[in-house]
Image (cartoon, rainbow, N blue to C red; front, side, top):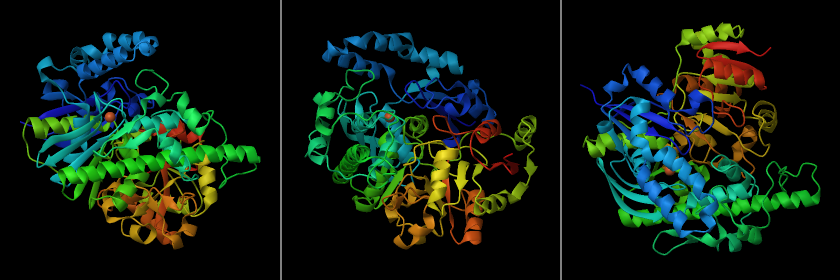
Length: 583
Ligand SMILES: [Fe+2]
């Protein structure tokens, strides 16, 4: 009889489930791909139902259901922080208690009634252990240092583990309220972006700036001699205020916060802005550049400490900060480890899979299994049903069947912007050629067109290239240690100097790109598409961005794809071999 384990993460942000059959991932998907609410945090009922249906089982077949953190320990942290920061915490205290006493604290019962399992089957894994398990058990390394860096779990905000065989052993941690993730989020908020959403924008903005606020921000985030870091808590409020992460001292040091939506016109892209606007945008870029550089330095510092404490030649990474692809590149290029492996969903969604693996390997004692070498683990729809939906929506789909990759490549070469849906949706936030918007990467105008008329997002934000594995090294400077993260678009590195002109739409202002290396075995259709585009144009790469509009989750089904298609400037849509043209 097979052993079925359902991992669940929820109630903070990015709720998700992962279903294991004898330790092997059957399906893993976020609730937002069903509810259409971005970062949906609700208990992932629909995602769980879909995963079990996909596996042909019901809740009664589950051997274990594991939640990705320990709510009582988290509640203990919130309660003791509220007491320690009284009276400042008084305003937020009733709201916090309402949320916890009403729902989160009685989680075992909620999980049982929601998912239909008996109480003795429910387990809880520590938040950072869930992250660590997601990073270690999916990797090819049976001997590794495992580093988790995020906002906060129960108490830990950064943790180091020793991974050996099928065991994970704690080595050290940095505890709340000192947090690298929350520090970056506070800067994100100061720059006028939404926390847990706008961090990528800060990373994009940083490329336009210089780290001239080092003396000021260096006072707020310090790297300690013991390998850890500390934050000047007088400058921040995340440890007692429910919504404001930064305090007045940050503004005293680097100037006032950027108002959300303020046009960004730095010196490298001034447009027709007046000199005062350019100077103000440059200040914002320089704040972003300084904070970005600080986070990179902190990650290198933590990695050196990990090397000294754990040794070995592999570092496995998870936690929300592991989504910082620029920092990942620096770890790969300049860090002390020969190999870097990052879970494709390093944020809290990935904790669902980590917690499930923790049960299988650490609790039940099973040896390591297959490497997680693909991210298409999520929701799919039978092709016939997609066709019915497209017909019902009046889309007039044309069945191009197995020729879809070559047809799409020809569309791209003809300057069309393509919505591409193929197979199962991706696990994690990156679109990796299953739910992607694709375009010709050669001319910079295409970036501006996709930003302005397709995705409706800020003009300064870069797009990533997907490149065939065989050609990647000729076009991008990818350090050997970044080979694995580049498969999941989790590392950013230089476009080779002589290739930048041929990749105008995907080369960022600093000459880098968040390159996605596409493997022919795990992504055959997408690889064929890019290779054919290369035959047509001489450039074996395409512009790849997630198939969604600003503020919406990535599409999952043909219906979602059509809803996005008709509201955007996409020219052509492909759904599992059906081609739809814009009218
Ligand atoms: Fe986390």
